[in-house]
Image (tube, rainbow, N blue to C red; front, side, top):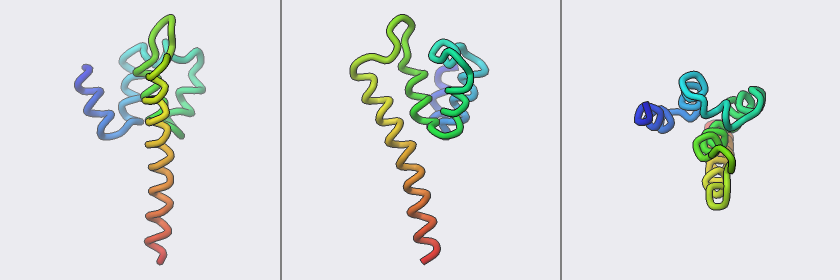
Length: 92
């Protein structure tokens, strides 16, 4: 199951996060409600995926793990920015 989730994450963070939410309790244990992970799936899938994977019971996300969550945020923002740059280039 773990290898399947890694392969899905490489293809799409949204698909991997949805499968993790359905088949494991990792998302439920990282978040108290369903609205924050739902918004994460829609707007910041890599950030949400990294947070869920790195969250540990009793400690949450600590220390250097925040760098990986920030890296997920950079990937999310980069995907939005790259899409905008590509659209502007196609109009030229």
